[in-house]
Image (cartoon, rainbow over all chains, first blue to last red; front, side, top):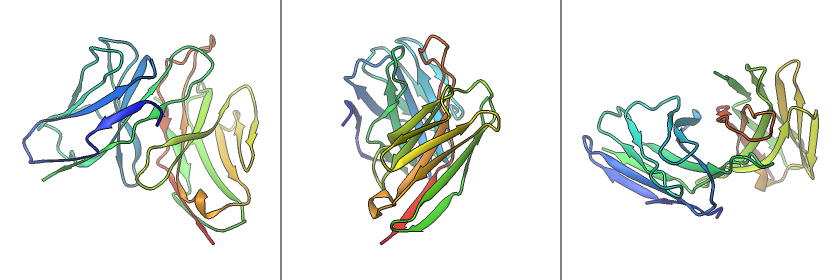
Length: 114
Length: 117
């Protein structure tokens, strides 16, 4: 499974509630990423982190927040400010340095907000 | 930033035929180009990648070609099989000369490939 887990697989929330998506990896990867996937839109980058306690906004960061307190963990909070939060969310990680540039993806969390 | 365009958005082929998916990129400094395959309901998985110091790379039935001058790269799948049916994503990124990648990936919008038996 690539050593990246996301939980839960399906998540349902009412509009106006914040929700946190979990992403954990045991690959000792330095960099971690959050993507949002909508039909026909491809993979859009929300936030990414190269090292612990540091992260950068991606292309669609508005309405989302992250933290990187541990190397293994990169949780994503979808806030009530996100106007259209229903989507499939993918977490990824990779090792910085070395000869491989591959990003490994988690299984994803499908969030539905009603 | 980088802009990656991918075509076509959908592609249907008969089993045994070849499939070609094309991508263009805008940043001449991009030098790493991976292709990911995502089956329905599953996570994207890397199937092949190419770096800017080579023009072509093959792995069994799949190959990728890169034209740096035209800022264009393509995925070629030969002898397609029904299990090749999936969404394919191209991406582009910068990597430092030293080999460590600090750049993020920029993805195309994906191509839904359907292989009919």
